[in-house]
Length: 344
Image (cartoon, rainbow, N blue to C red; front, side, top):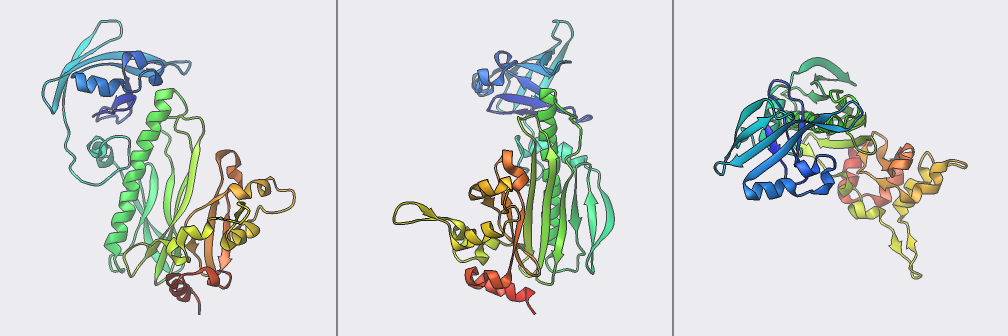
């Protein structure tokens, strides 16, 4: 499977191994930024000269083969692969792949490119529990999601959502391993270890934690993520919990004063004041005005606001729980209806 990207580089993998092999325009082999539109220009010209590269012993890329391709029709390309010493030559014949499904993957390439990777997923299932509820934990080579009993309200919609999330993790893992392998950094086959797991289950709502531990995909920094999805059983879909606040997400935006200086909103001041790192001597206190806030998720006691900071201060990321009574003046009609679901 080959993916031709308009920007910077192409890539391919063998169906048997499913490991990324980068393809770069010759003048961009050492630094793809030299000619970022080389692939697009070659596509328009109908001729492709590409260097196949693999990481060298010192982390630098070395050429492992040269591709010469020409378009034979709108959907077919043919050419040759030649060893870097001008020795062995192999024919190449490519045809445009049509995706079997229509699901979006969120990857760098089109859906059809990832379908063999998704088809090769091996799943393990085991029983899991939260409170008095039972579900299945479904684990692939890269991540773990959930499946619920078919007799629950809108179970089919939730199970489809959760399995699509698992497929997206395999795509993310492939793209991440491509980044690691192409640059000679880290273990290209290391799983990403993401999880989608329930943290609250009531008759009205299911709160799912979407967590990805620290992973390194070949960039300047590693990355991790933590977010929450609030699923409504009666509606059979994820709900926008910002709508539970008067003004939605804008309820956290500062407003200018007469002097032009921004004045933090009442809700933002409350979140800042109650942030666990807002204590004397804590270095995070100095950057609390720079934090961003994710959509809240419900707990039995109220709403929990997850905060994010820029990379250098991500140790300050924390959760701020606010009780329903504290939140009542800020809740919308929809939010007050949700609150009543949790209050006796």
